Image 1 (cartoon, one colour):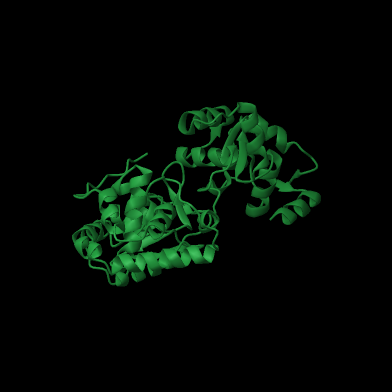
Image 2 (cartoon, rainbow, N blue to C red):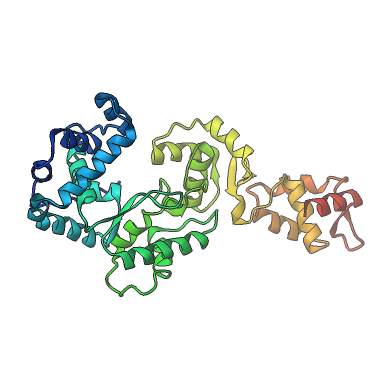
Length: 357
């Protein structure tokens, strides 16, 4: 996992918060310290503070809002302008709009220090907070025009990624940048574009680093079947279920018993049994069904076929011996011969083929 690069600040957030709070009444200061987690990392709710003072949660909210307004009008606020400007520059360097979590993690790992930075963001007039919603994470911006363009580009991106689509980070970034209109070329580098993608709650990375829709099984991996799908898609060719189980363990550090893996693959129509214990992905073009069904569908699509043509076609779809194909061709309920010796379907097999097509 890529480690978040830290940005070193020239000021101490806790000392700066103390100065901003110094002109407040004791109760007002306590409310802000409790609400923002400035003394204890755990932030208190409006209701819990109200119970301490025997006042309503709405009254606590009023005290909080009035205290923040008082700070913005104070000499302490004017003295902290360079500090606010420095935080603004950090956000600008991160692209002008950044998720709250990423911003705080970029500055420091300590939760209390993160709370002090968050306090500065709320107090400062320079910063705009965008609330979390169904599509986007909570985020901060210092460039309204850019923020609007990023939001619009992500909205368009959401509409142009299919449920099953998986893209490399580079491909997803290019897809996003194609929709980011009116932004100067060269301003947005790969790191900033990746950070913009992380504003979205509808697209995300899977455990192998590929991007897709968050709701997709390919991204929100929930069990052996999904891990197996990612393993096989990465491998690019059919695998034995024992190989799949071992790869899940090695790649994701997840326990995957071979027998359990085999059972899970059988139940999922994304996988096709193409040989003894061998599975391929349906999206690779493999037909579902046992060998006689594959032969039936081939003849239904192509018309009468010779033995050699059938063997060649089936071996592209299944990992098995020629004799297994010949044994299936002897099934009188499915296959007959025309006057040229080519294999054709019986009337009952034709009906089944039409039903499955």
